[in-house]
Length: 300
Length: 242
Image (cartoon, chains in turn red, cyan):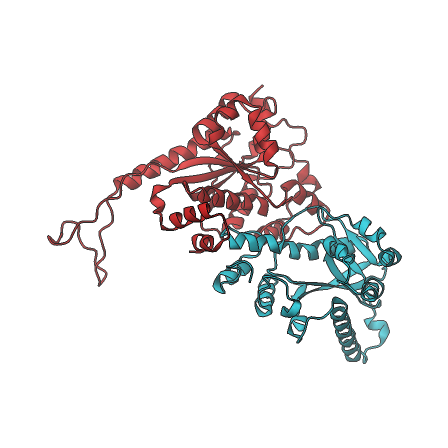
């Protein structure tokens, strides 16, 4: 109730108020369903990561065209070899603790279970296939038979001649899978040898990006300066983050090494987990020191 | 072992509603004071302002206090105090400080009495022989408000920095060194003003949270889940401009 009703009271311009009234009566089935996927180290997960999802969902839903139904957090595998990366087992557990109170966010371990590092395009492809398979399954299974008072299921062949049969819902395509990221992720496309050009093209052409940015103008400029991004700019949704929330995992790790509190920067359960297992020390920050980041090795 | 000064941090404000940023101020301030090696922060107190403060959109004190209480359920050292909000009228910050300081002395006296049977050599631990200090915890924006004409009485500002002390946490867009140098009183007592750099900058404010709520946007992860549920259950922050 909250979101649409609150909009009716808000002091927005009359045209958007009309749009809001429409959306409150609108059948959500008319919107494109979207699943947001975020890839990254999550070393550790912070409230900033979680906020990206909330901001993206609000933005996409408010356009009136989309209905964000799920958010997936996919921590990178240990084979990524980033300096300071601690084991995937811990990073996954922390992400699970962080999302336990969320109704729509979940953690996926497929990427991190792989022995080798996987390109983001491959992770997107895997999740796309999963969504297509789920969609196929749900549209071929017949609707469950109605339960009568007394708890007995009515058998499908026991149709009452006078009762209209419930019509099967129209077959929907799978939800659209989009990559959720921050502006720094987008700008990493320019780092030599980090990304395969064909992967960048696939990501923006086939899937699409929802990119949370603090400085929209700089990000727009970055898109403008790239032919492939410019070509698919309609598939890159820029979401403004009005409040600076400078909670980077790097700062969290630094604070922990220096014995400083990270409470309220990471969810409570994550902070307790970090403390319990004493993750993030000077030693852990030296993990993979001297190793080459996996994509650089692969793209040589 | 060097004797550490016990410190209690008191934060006054609307807490309309309380956010993770408010809670962070306490953590950051405590860290800073501990890392000087001179202080032991023994308690934090959040004192929500009286309804008669008259600020726009101020939710009722009983709600603001309840929300703070919920937010502090998992904190081992910070508590909410209702004294200020229960008074008949709005009270100046310096009076709130005076009240809490006299409470502090009263408790000390009670503890001392209780322990008076035991010879002092046995109970004396270096950490507890120094007199506790009560300090006002605030963001750099409050320091700036000292300059607003007629908002604070000069003698109050002086009493706050001279008798109690400030722990002031930086905020983006505020230059606290400048605020200090622009004020004779603050310059004189700058030894009693602890400037804490907040490395993790955040513009998060209760104003932003209220705006987001009015517009039906998510505030998850900006304040504790229990506070968000309370806001929903009690229909708070639904309309702007009450």
